[in-house]
Amino acid sequence: MSRRCELTAKGPQVGHKVSHSNIKTKRRFLPNLVNVTFLSDALGRSVRLRVSTNALKSVDHRGGLDAYLLKARDTELSPRAVELKRQIAKKQAAPAAAAS
Image (tube, rainbow, N blue to C red):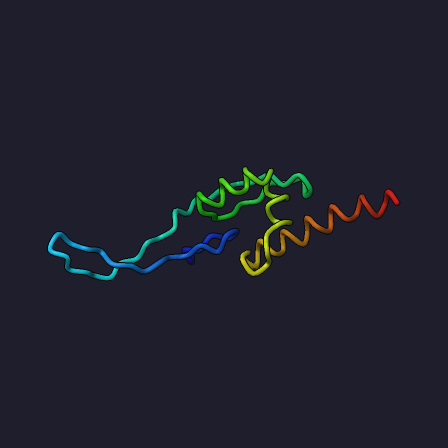
């Protein structure tokens, strides 16, 4: 399983561990990933995603998973999240088309 956030595309970064004697050795800074179950209002079901805690805060700030995905760029999202975005957009477009 890759260590990459499915919503923000955050991945591992590379840096140095610096000792007291200033010796630098390579190390990896891994993103803080958590498995989260989001509720999608448009789809009417829950969705499990592996996201960073930073993305979790962003989803809450934007008003839920549906709003976050519709506003996000496809290049940032994982293929699974892009598919969810398409499904949500399709569901939200259907009632608007039926009303007119």
